[in-house]
Length: 117
Image (cartoon, rainbow, N blue to C red; front, side, top):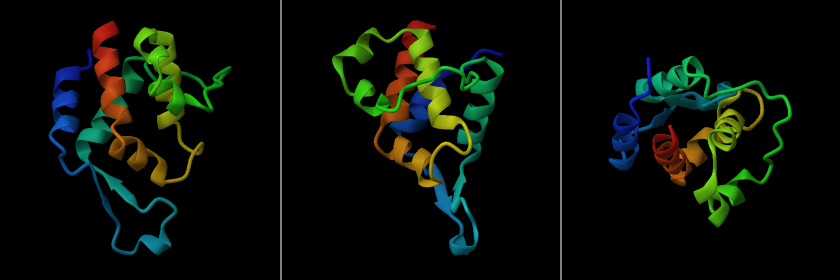
């Protein structure tokens, strides 16, 4: 099923509660509990092959890429690389996804995905 980008763009633009912190967070590797909407987005990204194998991905400075003029010219392959780096487990600290959401990067990427797909 295709991803309804408008739904997710609206969700992130309206500053919904994207996650909560587990009350006993000191006893968990990942203290964040993400909303069902974010969990659904991740499933849809996987089902629609937006998240790809980590082979040959080298975007360590992708946050600079997202904020650069080059991002305007990003293609689907660039976006798949960025989304894979964001959502693959074990690459980053637990706070990483929350930071990506809070800084507006995920919203920007979703807008670009809508534009190019």
